[in-house]
Image (tube, rainbow, N blue to C red; front, side):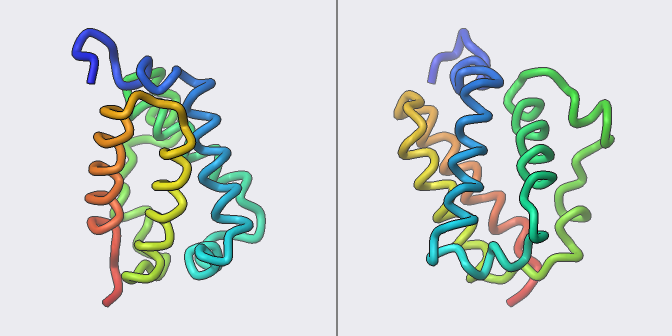
Length: 128
């Protein structure tokens, strides 16, 4: 990865992150491989898309709008009400893996993000 540029910039700023989030949720919404993780989400994915977009912008080094409007992410606590087992974890990652492969990001950025998201999905798993 480029050590002189923020991850946010390496992901293309808001435009690049929005494209990733859009593809990710489009896959979740339409791919049969994601049916179980889709079922955990509300009927409309609009709020999920917006929250994840704002979170990822701030997490990657961009504007901190998520924290300014929603407070600390507290990811474990915010995901606790939703049943996330191995199937949901794997299906979520399947969607992100595909979206990252199609992102056009530098291969080192893709590898970094895949590793991070793999760890995050396991961290958020709350069911056997």
